[in-house]
Length: 393
Image (cartoon, rainbow, N blue to C red; front, side):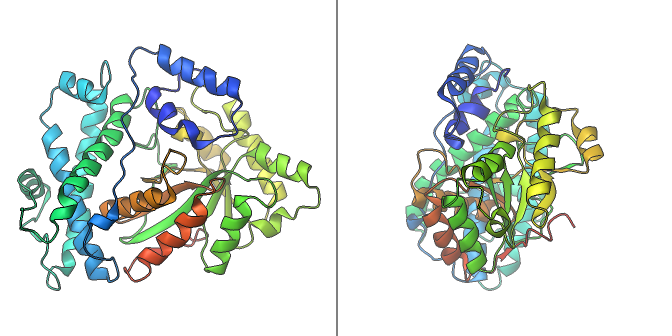
């Protein structure tokens, strides 16, 4: 299997609970034996009840978005001057890839500025968290000095928000520090790869991975719920999962399961495609299986398990006519989080990134609560949900 990396494996260890115990132990042992890595910190969560306003108008969405961007940028400004040794100590690593961190940080500041600029267009309607920010330089200066005063209407959010932003920044820093030795969604290798930043402001797309479940499982519920809401998502399925579902119930109408939805692939099994000798066969075999079984729903999109793929894989995916679809909003629904915590995390990251692909798992029972809550709490916020059939067209 090769080295997965603590950050990319333990961090998502429970994403695919059907992994054989022996395989899981091998993955964990490989990580613990690798001297550059150490266990990541806790998953960033925020109880959004500390925020005093509902996101029930586009303007209030922008207010919360400006606050989140400034809060996160403030934490980023604190680590910008840190040395390699200080960063490694903070992240629990023996060493960091400074070149990777610097490249990611430069792109991040630009993205934060673009997001804040979009969020400040409604400042005439509500001036909360509106500052004199006109470019990346002024954002850095204002973010470094950003503070929520003791008498602020938003005081209850100050400390919990700071804790979330620090923990989430560490999640992202750790990925950048290990990239490309351990590949992940933090950066791309080629123009075949998409992260969700291609979408317009306030536009989000749902994606699910690791499925399908056996007939009658949570995949059925998720797909049916989305149809009832007249929404769509891209389901990244495993070739052996599709085969197992069909073998378990030969009468199962898989085409009907994914009606009005999009189906991409994750390879034949949930296994890192970065070190797997037969990774190309896994991609071809799963794409062929899914296209044959689900011709009406199939889309030429691949999501690498754990976000891990080879640095030189771009040409192969181009030859196969496949886009590599990553994500920028990780719901962490396979971690030890409640449905409410997953919902709160996704909402907070939607405010920060203002666009993108949300990554969830259709095999997770908690998403029966997450999806309705997410849609209800954003119904009047002015966001839009991308139709999966329009993505990358």
